Image (cartoon, rainbow, N blue to C red; front, side):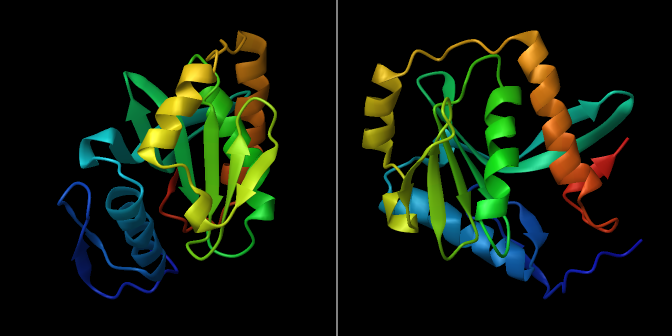
Length: 183
């Protein structure tokens, strides 16, 4: 089934150099990638774009994509998820990602529509800042990492967060969404 996103051609991914479809959403993702590298001090090697994450709810399984994982000092310490429109409705599934992706709580989760952003503290879910300019720089993130305990997430919590993630990202997705793969 063809997607509903207007494909404007192809473009080169700023971080990986791979050729990707040129869509309006991808243009925002590339804008975010440039912000992280050119203005926030991250190296391309610090960032993993389009990370696939298996999720499940009971017998239902799917794979979703996380736009950006930021790895520093051997740990995923920030995730960034893009979604068009309202960012408020994307907070909860992003927090679920921060509790499912690794065996520990990821300290910082950023939700953005490419024009605005909310920076969330992973453990509490509290919005700690708003605006693209408030996304932590590499230096700030290293400082945050030094104060964060990277607490382990229990298996029961992972299961519940995965169910939440499935409901928001898979059950709530358009059947032609190319960022979700139902298994």
